[in-house]
Length: 119
Image (tube, rainbow, N blue to C red; front, side, top):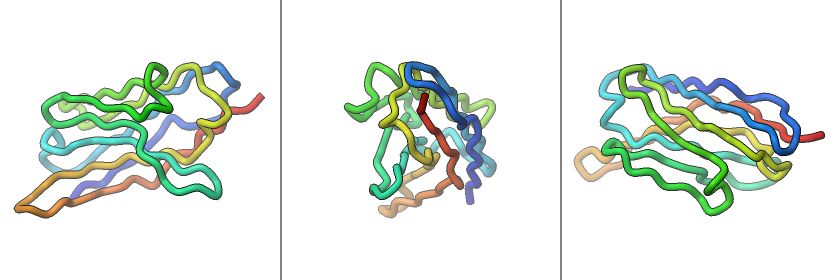
């Protein structure tokens, strides 16, 4: 079992920056793929970025070049540095942990943190 707690959201002006954190409890954090998703009002949840246990990183096209995901396995924490924020980045951001065990994918989610980009 993994519990995820996000923090770092808030209100920021266009062009500004925020850093989200996701603290994980439970064992074997380093074996999980950690990711960030977001959900804007009236829209489906969308994938933003993830970092694999081996270190490989992927970004959605909408955030590539502006957002940076990283993980600290010693601290059981994953981060999302968001720069050059745009109003369309406004959403609730969710942390995700997933792992393939015996052919089945197990997913864990945090409660979400609100990010609002507005002048």
